[in-house]
Image 1 (cartoon, one colour):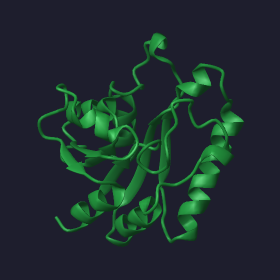
Image 2 (cartoon, helix red, strand yellow):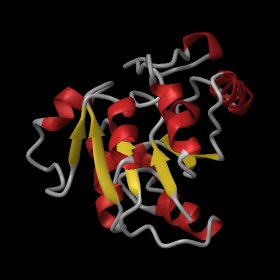
Image 3 (tube, helix red, strand yellow):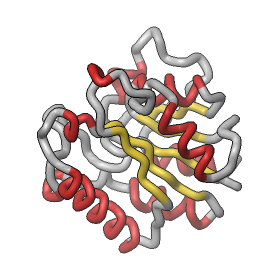
Image 4 (cartoon, helix red, strand yellow):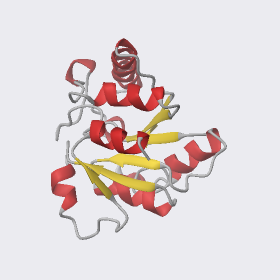
Length: 178
């Protein structure tokens, strides 16, 4: 099975230091939804793995998160894109869970759900924790320069096998021409 794992904020949609707390605040990065459609057209299943500590911080609830994801899925469908599943961690750093990236719980859950090995699977993110979790499970970390990507690119802890792309569209072009 061909699989791609995407972070949400800063990869698919514009990010905010104040969190994306409502469907109105969710705005796609230009070209990101078309990039997902391109992946789908080449036979890739696209899943999202996103830390959503705004829930644990009490900034929004599950109803709001579901509404945000509903808006994302509908916006994707309007351009012929499909996101197969959204995995999320609702915890804060202090919760010491196993699912919050850079820990690997969410990625292991994806591997179990799809009955696949994550070795070499593209994982596209804009933050160091996205890339560290990818590297820890043997996936291919891909950094986009959207969201926090420009800052992340200068981090000395960047996994050495990380590939850099301008945005999700450039990453999808690379993935689909491999």
